[in-house]
Length: 471
Figure 1 (cartoon, rainbow, N blue to C red):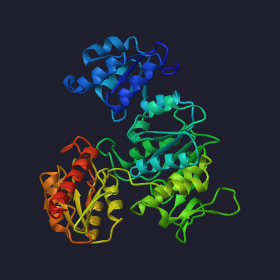
Figure 2: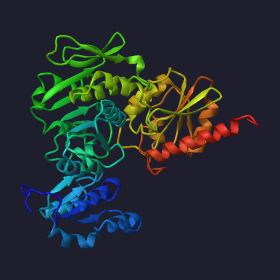
Figure 3: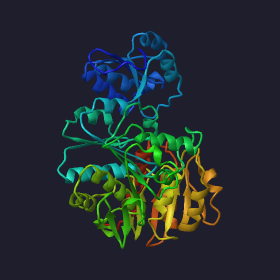
Figure 4: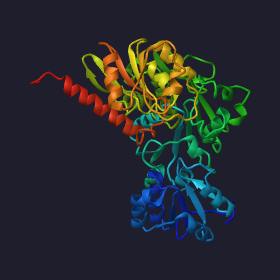
């Protein structure tokens, strides 16, 4: 099949799904329900895939090992690539060499979707912002489906969406790499900081992947961007403004001639392009989330919601009732006047820096480390020196991080239990023990969620031991 041939992903078409994680399994389920013939494959050893194989076979699909792949490719109409599977794998190259078009899961989700999509990306904060945006639409009495990188497969949400509904999608750079016609009604880029440099050769390559979010937008669509981010500020000027093919709304922490959303006198304001005066959205001190970065997240979500026609009253209500998501600056306990905060989803140095700024300098004992993703820890080390009382290092990246921390006491731990106990010994009343790793989790844990769960369990175990007898 040639690249230009239309694929419906239904009605007997033969489709290969590459990658049998959460999104891949959802793709199999949705495409089978649409009547497609579906095969699934994954580069992991077959013994590790037994639960996934059982699941796709129960849906009426077929598992293919690498040896059986060539015969299937002679009959395939298309392949769907799960998030996280690089375009450079041997399997993907084999499929492309056979002339089979490869689509990302979010591309297929878009093509089968009947509802408008609001898409959110960024290096950090995108899950919180996606959830906030969904809450704003719900507060405005919209029927809304939230999916994507946030944890539930986008394709399953778009398959359920009616034309009068709305879909909010958290999308990653990995997912955007292989889009073709994906065209959100509103797109939002929050920020960019060094991450995934084990996958991208440079920050410019990483940036270009993010910018694909608005590549297919046009008249009637809106892009919302962060004017304070140096990687995206050129898009608001004559330097690169030609690249945005739709209306552009910018947010900034201070008033700017290009800003549609900004903070002034402790309030978030919205200056609708072409309107005679700005409207107050809400006081900053009503935001219940820790950290200055969450003010930007709220403005981003508000900008996307306003572009979708959501009322200011609904936006304010949604923010005021919002709670921190698990593993994102989530307070999980307090023991002897020391607060324990789980930020396990802080998997890059920029997220650690943002988390540190949420607390008073010198009053934080930080647990960090894990599996590095090709990032530079020098700026993170500077912030740890400036703001931490002490640092407890875990995981493969411990030595690399240690090279960039000069003034603050460093301690090592071989497990999360040991790290939590060491942090407790270092903390003083009024301090915060913060798990903010700045790294992936896969050297010691199954996922960032698993890492946060283990941290929380160890904190609760400490609390049990610290409780007075008979309490």
